[in-house]
Amino acid sequence: MIRTIDIIEDYFYGLTKFELVKPKVYLSQTNNPMKKKGFNAAEKQRLANVLFFLSENGFSKSTDKCGTYSEDDDLYFRLGKNGQYVVVNHYVWERKAEDHGFDLWMAEYQKESDIGLVEPIWKEIIVRSFKVEKHGDLVISYLRN
Image 1 (cartoon, rainbow, N blue to C red):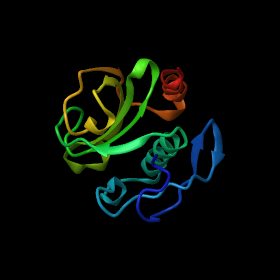
Image 2 (tube, rainbow, N blue to C red):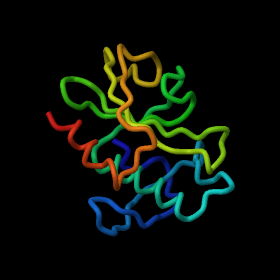
Image 3 (cartoon, one colour):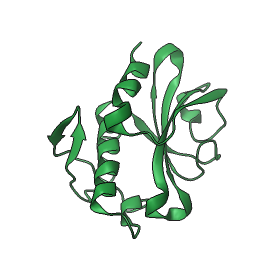
């Protein structure tokens, strides 16, 4: 699970389950998209919302080393229905703050440790530009067995 990612970096107010909370979202110094110039407060909050949602729902974290989703960017995953994985990739195009987002996928891997290292047996895009407040319930439905 993602609970704490390396070191305390900042606190953000975010929405989860559609109520205002103060999530404990911590980001590491490495690959921290919020350190990039151009991230305004709204983008930081949106990022914190997604990371908090993934943390609260037991997702694990990896890096896409084989370019299946978005090479060298973060992947968040959890085993879902029928032995398939729910995968959320965080893409940051050319490391520009305005060109980042999250996509939601279903994928099948031989084993969990393959995620981010080898191509999946199959994958299917579920939602491009995933937003917690709009698609959170959909993610939960894919996690229920």
